[in-house]
Image 1 (cartoon, rainbow, N blue to C red):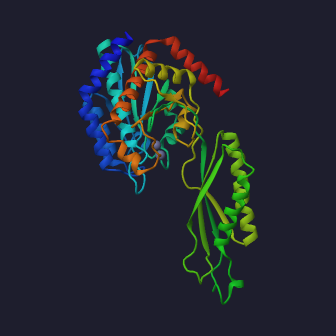
Image 2: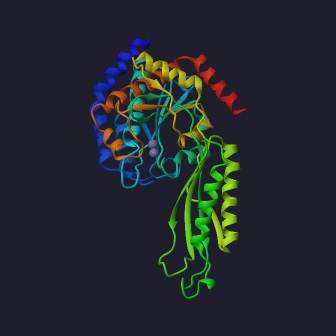
Image 3: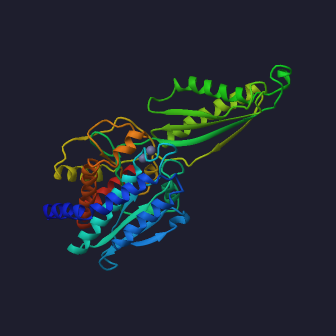
Length: 396
Ligand SMILES: [Zn+2]
Ligand SMILES: [Zn+2]
């Protein structure tokens, strides 16, 4: 049966490839920032509609989010829900340097292929493709997780593009986005410096304190920031200085601890400089990713079944809003190769690689492997039970 599916899925991918290439290249040429992905969202939903999905636009009240659903079988049978999550936001200046154009296209292709096999083979269940905007900034998946979207889903999968090889779903860091605003008082920097309160000094002392703190944190933690406002003229004591930071840690509990320490650095800087301090969350915080091992193993076995031999574990770590999904339902977030060469994320080279002919090899492998995994779960209740009991046990 599985062999038959593999061949059928491969034929379907080739049959629809023209549409997938067109979508991928269109989004590449029209990069849009988070929550502004109007063209991408319209193109995604148009294609999913063409292939027979029911579309909910404005999903969770977000203009550029959507839900596409296909149900097969009667209401008693189609209770298993599998979601493939799509991303399509770009980065400032470098466009699709994270490859979310091909990311989203892969998710759509997977949904379409699964739907065709479900129809043809009379397989019961519900397949969803969920369009999740703003992964690079506000992370719409967090909002969806908070609204309970993923609590009703049995499995969630998404595969991200990368370089060199396929990578297993691993861990990601929990992350908090903190903005520190120091307020002081202007004065002539030479004539009356003693009458000013230097807000920039607050920011500089914050950086210095964090540099010292970094030596005492766990190796897996990261604290990194930029100065977004630091004064206007050298002869005016700055009355306003702002720094944006990301604080990242492997677990939510350590993140909480670290955030307190970082905030204390800011409070100390404010006290030392006599400035007033405001701290806000300027972007959505992300939870860490918990990979469901059984689900990950099923996906990996399917990759091997397709003939893929180079499957690696990722050594570097970042943050993704897939983390929040993984706290609601069994989740995987592996990577597929655009090329056999090394690629750096968030680069122009990465963006260019997404539209090269060789990119579709890795994309096809990821698509077929996700499809085989979903079809296996729809048909094998024991496998689903095993995945779910692991999820419940990790949550304990
Ligand atoms: Zn990305
Ligand atoms: Zn990215």
